[in-house]
Image (cartoon, rainbow, N blue to C red; front, side, top):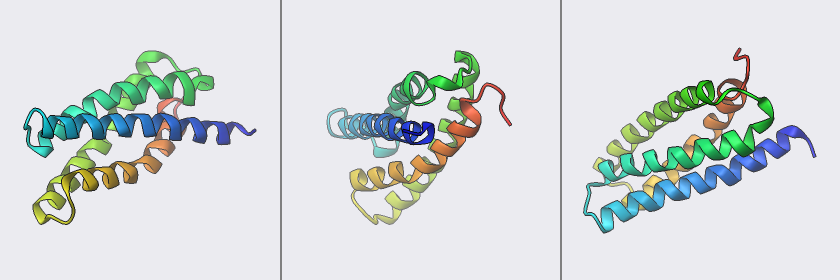
Length: 130
């Protein structure tokens, strides 16, 4: 099995776990804690960041041998940037009431996955970033 295929497979597994964590925490914050969806989305992202980084560092990109701190700081930049786009789009689409908040969040989380994989593979987890 090729390294890229293994990476993509682990990325999907870890990404699904992180996206599920993000979605579940956000929905629970809305339903149980009565937080507004945008604030709940922030809480969900913060928890999911921990799941995502630890999974990608230990599984998806483990062979790239970058140090913990450089990888974490770069991954935080990618994740925070993606989250900023996610949150802006989420706010706009919630305002337009295109779909239910939970369905909309699910679709936005899916949409960020591809760019995150590319940035992670070619910058975040490289020992010598290009």
